[in-house]
Image (cartoon, rainbow, N blue to C red):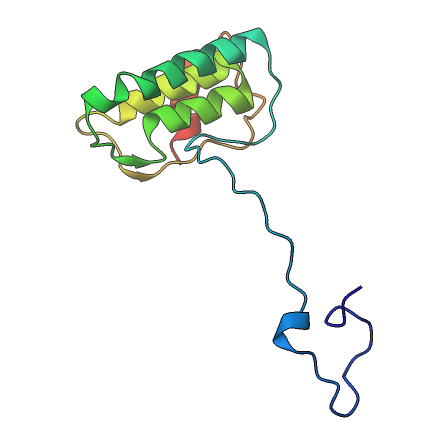
Length: 135
């Protein structure tokens, strides 16, 4: 253990810790920059297919569509996170309705993906996802 991290509360007399002897934390490896959600999620085939389509859009078509998104996060980032968190079916509906809200006359501002979906959201009631993402 270095002298800066020792349990001794204060140096005695003139035994001060010099700059060269101070403890410096080990360097942290830099994260690869990703604008998408990096949290844990189950890597099921449906989710991976949906995430692959969104990532393909981000890498190819997104540059041609324009950079005028009205929300934070962007619609593709929102779709990526929604599918990663909630699965292909509910996340896909959340992403589709988010793109619809982004059009003319739609909403603006911060619009995060909901952390949890209520029990009233079922696969046979996709219209309920319209209000789930709009906070």
